Length: 274
Image (tube, rainbow, N blue to C red):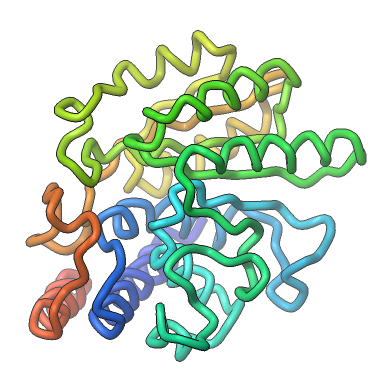
């Protein structure tokens, strides 16, 4: 694991998130920024994917259940080389490739169209079960939001994951503590998240979701677990990397102005220089 290179990839993704959202005038920065480090480790260090053949049958699969975080996924996919970075500035434009939520039919590298919260784990289950039935070696990864796990379908799917012994499935919970209407605790508490998944028959790992070594080690550990799926509960910061967005629920679904974009870009680039 080349942490220096991973940090560079993540920085570029965060810069592009700011640029594309300011250009589109809409989108979700907070939850996109909170999961960038997880996505970076997955796509640049752990997942077996082929940029030249996005639909390669033996590739690892990824499902972004919290589909409103699409800018974060797009930025990492573009950084990986699935499509030109120029497409990022066309986010949410009529006739362009990148929709407000992931579209598997129109965007190379996107394995599932998502956006209806709570459904991604069910889809990931299907992919993982298909891999088992077809005796394939690929693995399936998914990211859910912590507010999203207030959805009952998540827990129905969690029961199924354990029942079918989907040890080729790894779920990340992006636990930044905030959702569109406030903190998780104010809206409807989701804690204790690790205990809940353990009670549903999952292997559980708790990490700092911005620590590359911890993310990589957790994914590697999940690959060794047999007979049960793994949930990686990642403690993250909403708006990570941009000081005026960090821990601020108001940046859940509000795009930065051009002036705020420039401030964020300057801050991100200055942090790297230090």
